[in-house]
Image 1: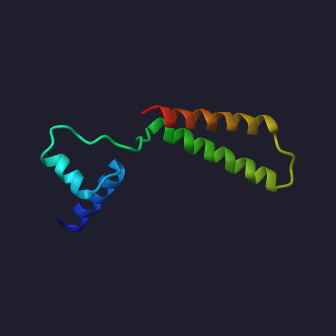
Image 2: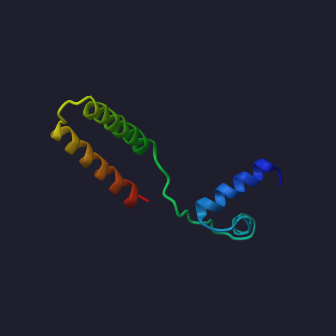
Length: 92
């Protein structure tokens, strides 16, 4: 097994929360596939996370400049974050 294949096996084992040997046995001998433990992050969720991160950075800059915070914008971002977290946790 090459170093790259070994790294890929380690990633798969972590993803499926099992050992490398079990991943190999499942691929070679078992008719069923392993079930992932970690949910996959879809492109839309990733884009939303980036947007929320940008908003948080803008608010931090705003607060650090000594200006008064905008409670409405902070509330909107908090609601967006909670919605996205719920989507990621319950959309498997």
